[in-house]
Length: 85
Image 1 (cartoon, helix red, strand yellow):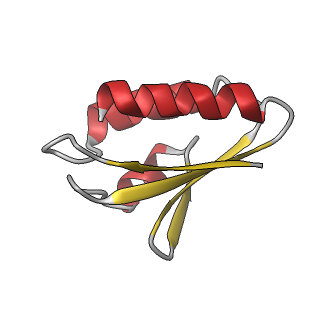
Image 2 (image 1 turned 60 degrees about the vertical axis):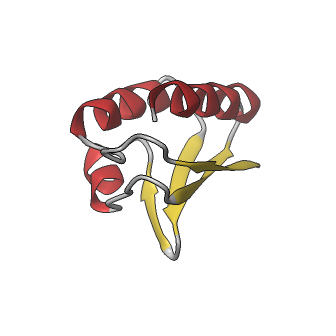
């Protein structure tokens, strides 16, 4: 299992268009990818659960990746977040 924390810097937080791109990126991988905001969690491959977290600028999320391609998936998701949020 791979896990990392990321603080959102985008002034709009995780909003619809980039959230859709994030979900699309997560769907490329076989691993289970969960995102946590405090005690709440969501499946990173489902846009509604990502949007329901309501992540705002300055808030931290934890991404947990588990599965056959977890190393590759975790690295790709971390890069995607850095470049887009």
